[in-house]
Image (tube, rainbow, N blue to C red):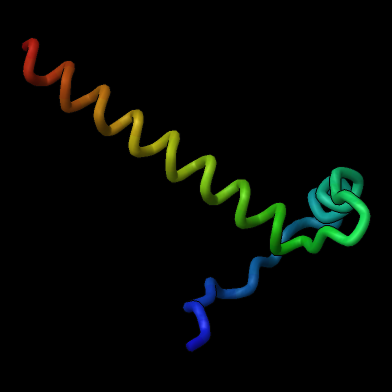
Length: 58
């Protein structure tokens, strides 16, 4: 069974060049995008927990 996919991502040429500069040998753009997505999801979950805890205090 295939995993669901996200829609393609259109970016400015400068952002694409920057992404290509951090790719390791054999690494695909999709790996960088997935890593970024995971990091931002974790950040959002942490932020949500902080806000929820703060609301309980008030």
